[in-house]
Amino acid sequence: MSNKVVQAMYNDDDILMDAVKEVRAANYHIEEVYTPFPVHGLDKAMGLKGTRIAITAFMYGCVGLVFSVWMMDYMMIKDWPQDIGGKPSFTFIQNMPAFVPIMFEMTVFFAAHLMVITFYMRSRLWPFKEAENPDPRTTDDMFVMEVIIDGNEDELIAFLEKTGTVEIKVTEKH
Amino acid sequence: MSSHYEAPIRRPLIIGDKNYHDISVDVAAPVEGKANKLWWTAFSIALIAFLWGIGCIVYTIGTGIGVWGLNKTVGWAWDITNFVWWVGIGHAGTLISAVLLLFRQKWRMGINRSAEAMTIFSVIQAGLFPVIHMGRVWNAHFVLPLPNQFGTLWTNFNSPLLWDVFAISTYLSVSLVFWWTGLLPDFAMLRDRAIRPFQKKIYGLLSFGWTGRAKDWQRFEEVSLVLAGLATPLVLSVHTIVSFDFATSVIPGWHTTIFPPYFVAGAVFSGFAMVNTLLIIMRKVSNLEAYITKQHIELMNIVIMITGSIVGCAYITELFIAWYSGVEYEQYAFLNRATGPYWWAYLFMMSCNVFSPQFMWFKRLRTSITFSFIISIVVNIGMWFERFVIIVTSLHRDYLPSSWTMFSPTFVDIGIFIGTIGFFFVLFLLYARTFPVIAQAEVKSILKASGEKYKKLRDGNHE
Image (tube, rainbow over all chains, first blue to last red; front, top):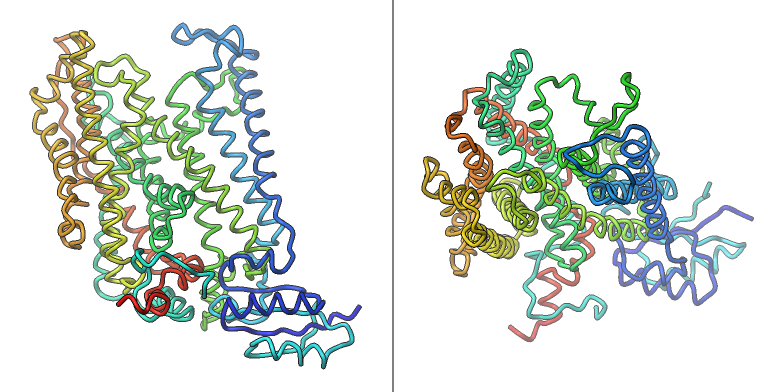
């Protein structure tokens, strides 16, 4: 398959939204859309699946909770039980009320950090990562829609020109 | 246009005839411009205070905490007062960025970035105090449950002080990633505007290669929402746990079940005051009055008024419960607080925290910038005294009358406190010149709904 794409630039989010819907209705394949801010409803209009990142956060939180329970059970009950101010340290459940704050903190710690790391990995964001937006204006006030050319370059450009675009470019996508 | 509907009764959050590009230009201006004399003056003063603080810390570490005014009876004083004060100030940032996000309050978008910056910078100051209070700072890692040469010597998970270690470090690190994730698109905007190669490189590095793909934005919004959901109980837990440092002890005046909600309300109260202090100056100096409007200040004043009143209720409840408990030690602790040798501190606390926010019931006062600024300073002084009153007045009258004493700070106590204020402002002033101080991507997303121009276009016939 060819890697050629048409980059149609828009200067308004509402025009972009209408264009995305038209392009999808005409059965062209939208490769990517770059926007300077979150355009609500764009993901649905593009037909993107919902993100599952919140589910991962829940699972990471469970890991954090289990880890904190294991850690405190090992350190306070199993490895070296101590009499601290007469607090019961014979079984985990007896000592558990004193462990609740740290169980909570570790749950949040794991959920938040591992979710953010997952987000950075999945969206390929890290220090020294080169930015890949097609035009520097896409972080300012321009919206770019990339549509794949499938041997229909002229027809596609003619179609996109009618969707309110302000600039059209054909490039090679790596 | 219809998709951007907002009730006409809502006042615009972005003043003037702005478009998307104008927002980029306005947010980038303080970063791209040169610092003026005022900034350099403020920065120099802050830096000198910071260096003075470092000197005092070095002296403390070198000699021991005997150089502070602490004594056998009053073992916690300015150090822990400052710690609680700084943590409390930090809370407003998370409240604005997380709680107001969950409540879908659009006005948070103009101020959340700076409020979160304030959170991070003030929690750094807070964290300093327990560490130097240990005396032997080189053993600070002993608070972490690390395997060590003693084999089975672990930290004590029954101790509220250890809960604090976990709470504060979770809070600082989670606030930091929340802040940074929100910063990525705005750093990317600065990167793509940058002309000088050095700036481009730095902002390219900081923006983690953000490109603004539709999928990235989808994840970004989900991550922000989940982080807000996590940060909300987290921020409540942090000050709850700070209050446990006192509440789980058996000192009359500390051993109180009302402490967690009372501390959280006080934290939000002082934090919003600090946000007002900082932003009233910043909106003027950095020309951001179109984004941090009078309405923002007014709404923050309302929060100050409400949380100040909650704090007032807590003070009165404390007094009532002390009397109602029938425990003479409790009764004495509170009577002594109000009428004992520290009556002046109690009066400061009461007048600054309970009386002064009541002025905000008047619309004329809460929409006055000068008055808001004065009250914000008064509240911060009051909240410092609240912690001082709780800590020192409860301790200075021991169970043993022969050890009754007073506390007076040495120059080192004062120097370290001033040093942290200096450090805080050094960080904040550097931030104000190098970071996008407004979450411009988020502000752009509400421009059509809440921008003055668009609102007028939509509800044109009303005026």
